[in-house]
Length: 401
Image 1 (tube, rainbow, N blue to C red):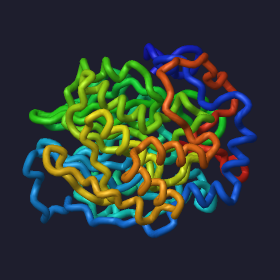
Image 2 (cartoon, rainbow, N blue to C red):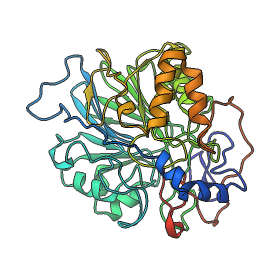
Image 3 (tube, rainbow, N blue to C red):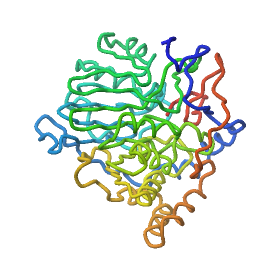
Image 4 (spheres, rainbow, N blue to C red):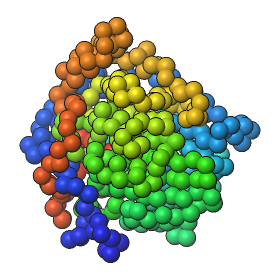
């Protein structure tokens, strides 16, 4: 780990200068987090619809050789060229170190973890609580599956009882074979941390999975940077990309992409011309940022339309094949807050810009489209209390994102 080019002075570094939070923003974050209006805006007004995944042992395999099932947040089951890859499985009720506090699920899991078919490999993007869930890992460990994780993350899995021989830790641009698949960790712009005092001591990564016939990309959590074009040139083209488009904020602009940046990343990965299908992830399941609950979906769909990109926005549990018809029904509008639904209707009649401006104007720090301007470096100092990318919870407990 210490020999990694990303590791220096006792911590991992980002590919470009990155701030986890803008200086002086903590008070505004707390004010927004605990305001009654803010809490209402960040949650759906109705029940989020779920679908039963078509991934059981009795279900037919994907006709095209590639099928994706979004189960919520960043958890995706990819069936690719006869293999099953499970990304960032989080089946827990809260993404928190505590069972009684921290962000709680906004919808149930669409299928019990025990009812999923066995994955050939579980892929983890980084160690934040909304991506690395101890109960889920322990349950999956009982299936005998393999785990692919960034450098340093394997120590958590070993501590939870996973056998070291079933854990592969990778640095950026390192690969491992799983059957006929090749899994490669690629650069991302984020940070790490579980609990206090661990600093930047584990790596974060995006992932490329290449099979004999298909290639897919999972972003994990990341801010936008120009390296995605290099990833696309080196490992693409991709039949599908799974890209973080939620939990963005003007309070932490460097570590989470806005929807527009997510679509731009999808385009960068395709060499400048959108190709394949874009599956937006990291939204809808947990309340982690000031923006309205439904805003990531609305802005992603609008940005994809403008860019000419194919985008799938499935309900939690919905399975689809990227080469086929994509789920594009705006189901979230039926459960969003009334003001948001009205803005979405205005968008359908009068264009996207008005609705986007309306939604952006309701939440301080919600995040707006911005140019790719690398900020000054304000990474956590060695030994300083780490911060996570979600607002602090009661008692100051870090959560993750």
